[in-house]
Length: 219
Ligand code: G3P
Image (cartoon, rainbow, N blue to C red; front, side):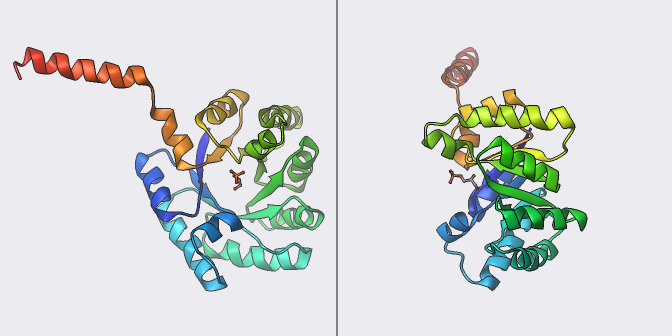
């Protein structure tokens, strides 16, 4: 399973990359705004900076919501770097645009997906990735993980190659559950990824090993 980090923070992207387990980066307009990135040129330069850190795919989201504008914006983004994936919202013009990008060999990530029907449409349009937002479903008392299971079943039934990119991942159990359900990718904050490292028995066991080693060495 691929690990993407869901942030526009260069320091956190670098930290995840240095850990050796980073397969890509996802961003969205809110995450870019959180880093204070505004204005066309700054946004373009920031995507380029992200591409210089990671070896994996980098999702860059369009702001446009009409077909012609999504195509124009997406083509500019796709030309920035070979690893840029054009992130397109699950709306009617977005689905049409994904079909167009797919025919041109431009990678896409269909975002803001909250139902199996939307995921089916994204796959039929030829999206490279589909992003079901599991945390936001959990937030409204709906089982986000059930959606991952449903999409996996549907895609496997027909051999769709669209990769399931579980988004809005909030904590380590989301990651583990997504892995069990066969999600192709998860994207989440650095904190959810590094939380996988933690177990008190690891800490206690290591402390005991080091203490025993020091005792035997007479330190
Ligand atoms: O990038 C999309 C998604 O991962 C957002 O997550 O935590 O804002 O629901 P969140």
